[in-house]
Image (tube, rainbow, N blue to C red; front, side, top):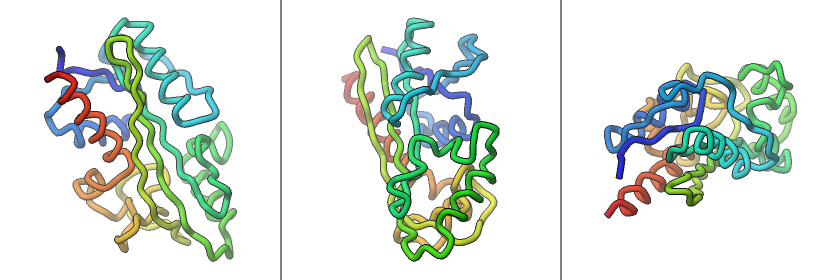
Length: 195
């Protein structure tokens, strides 16, 4: 069985993060490496649905084992929003900064800053489908802090830390993050599935 897997994403930040988390255990390639240059479908209303839709799209088109993820920031005071719509919270022509600005405006003067990042990974392996989840609890800051990371990282402080994800070094974030947790479960499964 191969140690090479396609990660169905066009997000270079996610790809870099997963390469670092995989740290040589598995060879992770992206859709462009197998000849797919276009967008990946993301039309579902749940993280699970979006992750599976992307994985199925690549698996069916190329007949290969692959995995995909979807991640949402779930804010307690906003009833779990932006959730599955995190990447386009401020609208279709969005930028990460626009999304953050909208979030901070929605939470203006709100004492409850509790939030969590949740990642769901969908794996298609030998025509079977599997899911892995990672969750990290934390709080939303009132201002942007830090230069690292991407997305909502500058306003999310994980519990037991004083720094935002954007202030933490990548090697620490990639041990404690939602994506790291989900990916570690995936890689553990793959290692044991091969035995």
